[in-house]
Length: 265
Image (tube, rainbow, N blue to C red; front, side, top):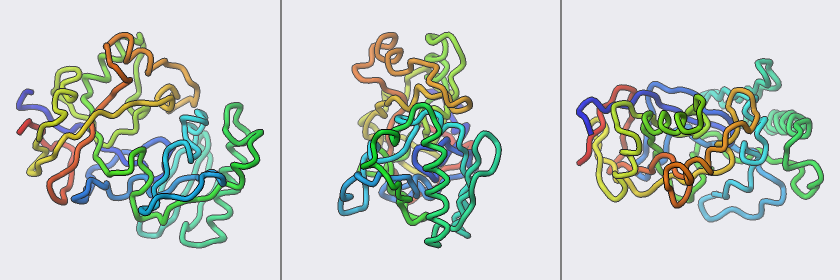
């Protein structure tokens, strides 16, 4: 790793399954939970009971894995006022306070109508999945793909290597990572697994890879499945499972900032 490896971009996803938004900094709890990340999600009615922490797996939610055109739905969530605003293809669809039952109901109705209008969706013909629920309190990070919390990190060079093999630009928002790091060799982050790294003034333990799903095939601008990311990762790079990025947990509460230096050890 070069001394110039630094965080280039930070992202959070307030609503599970929707395209992430840029952030200047991210507060990370000692257990790896990222403040404001995946605090809400549109849950199927037949999802069953959550675990003791309120977590459910990704297949329980409306997401780009099952509804690629959700990429056209952008969200803005204000954690102070608890107001969620959704736009579809640039036009506002609904806005409301997620702590108010009537507003939550209006938001659910609007998202249900949008989803049912998409050619590919998991609701049409599956009445047991309706009505959707708006899960989450808007505060607690809860709906990541794994039960335990992690910060997700990826090298921009790994994205560039994938784009070269695919033969077209790869928008990093497909992967809904928390941090993109410049100044690394392609796939260097995968060599960190089982090691400690420093980001800014905090040590993080890198615990494993991020294995990708069909959501990465959806273009975050057009909502169309236009790139075979999973097969390219396994076929072209020899990954046993389609992998992009790593999971990390801080040794104590921390804050990530754009520009933070990243080093091993």
